[in-house]
Length: 521
Ligand SMILES: *Cc1c(COP(=O)(O)O)cnc(C)c1O
Image 1 (tube, protein in one colour):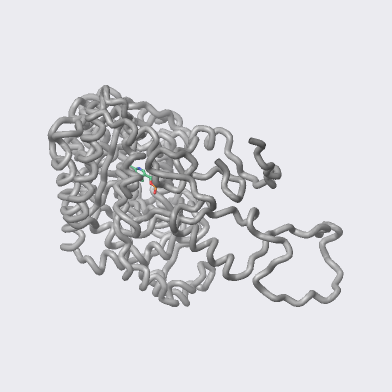
Image 2: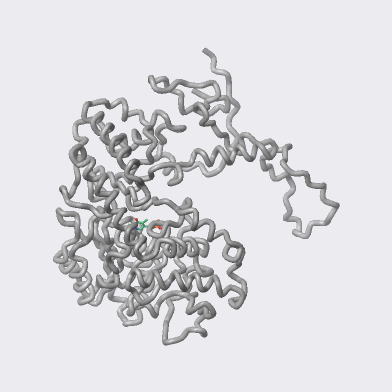
């Protein structure tokens, strides 16, 4: 079935829940053509005078043919972008239980402060003497990050969690090289349940990755770490709380073993939101840990950016933190010649200081919550996850038994055995119910994993409705109502995408479509 723009309609199949419409629109969800399909070369929303005659100075390289950009009247352009924005699901639309990603509410106060002209309109190349306020924000935020983690130093410039991992591991690499062990310590240990960015980071900067298994309770056994430790090991990368939503209870013993072997302990701190105000990673023996401001400290997750992933560093790694760094509201160290106290930065990670807008938002979150408020946010996040876990545990199976979780509840797919419904089908049926699916098939160590992280943002009423919805779906799956799942989502603007083909054969360039012929009946 093709709509009037010659593209397949989402409502093309008549399956009892949907029927095709002439326009391809579904009630007030309106189909949106690409700008190239709907724009016209002869139209423009602005009136610009013809330029006076001039001689180009591009040495004959200037464009000889029109640029071919589609044009729009202002209302058309407005509608296009507003409709696109309405197709987006976000934390401002509904519950977004994506485990490990921490899709929590972004308080509007953060936005108000970040938009103050004194923060929003400054430029990184302005003289330092004109931006003491901005440096003070970075310095204040750094202070609170060090206080909350119990660590003596922090590198502020990394622009995402994964970038923070890179920064921390580069500091570790530099520290090892400074000890003269750069040629021998080449191995990084990573538990099976780690986020894919951990082994990717280690491999990117030339380490060999070795995996450590988890024990049946989902945590890492210090004995397994000790077995793997040897003079070739540079570091362990361990997530705590881990990606199974469990606190690594032997983390102090693991840290001690790693240090005894002359290696460093990198902690993936993406799940710091579960323990802020409760545990200080510095007290656990961590040498480096990134903090995703967009997870723990409520800054927006924006389509691959603009994130911020500051890395806290131990005494041993602090001297290797990269340029530039803020000493205080008046002093910024940018270059080798300016370095004080025998520090040996490993280099420069980003052009400037990091994501200023995110720093402002995260500091606003911290100051508006206070120490007690941040501790309560962690407690509420853990409470919400356990409320969901207990609300579903009689119907859905948990891979590591009936133990309490931290900030996310993990289920596997053994409860779906013989129902004909998979984790993917179940997640797609959640879309019909108005929920963004949870994280699926991660962590990889759990078969058909469903990782649910409600965060502290949800009210009890919201959690109750979510639990009731998942119970309804779970019971339908167990009753054998496979049709509710196999074709889901039925109500979404698009049905099931061919994700494999999209990944293998991405179409990155628009080409004009073949003219649509009237189908001969
Ligand atoms: C989100 C996450 C990362 C990566 O963080 P980004 O900011 O997305 O780069 C790394 N590890 C874990 C466990 C995460 O949840």
